Image 1: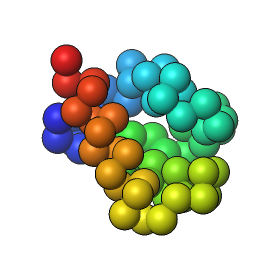
Image 2 (image 1 turned 30 degrees about the vertical axis):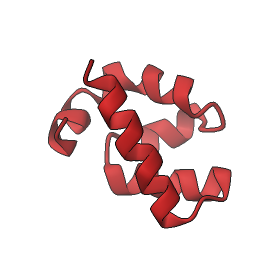
Image 3 (image 1 turned 120 degrees about the vertical axis):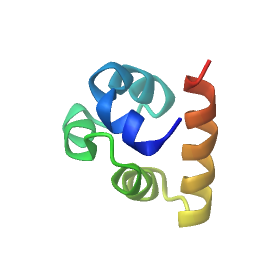
Image 4 (image 1 turned 30 degrees about the horizontal axis):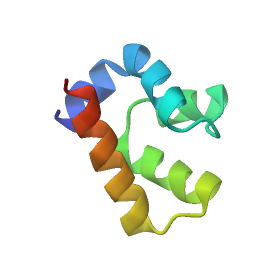
Amino acid sequence: MDSNVIKGKWMQLKGEAKKQWGQLTDDDLDVIDGEKDKLVGKLQERYGHTKDDAEAEYRNWEQSIRH
């Protein structure tokens, strides 16, 4: 799924993101607003991931929501 599609469907996908990453707050999800870089940054901040690990988590999540 293209990052533009995720941004366009963010209102529907916020719940999926919240299930995947329970430490993200509703305010975090509002700020992220479907933007990959912001989500990766919040994963680094909330979970202490490296940038590479956060991007890998994002890619795995992105693949999981395609189905």
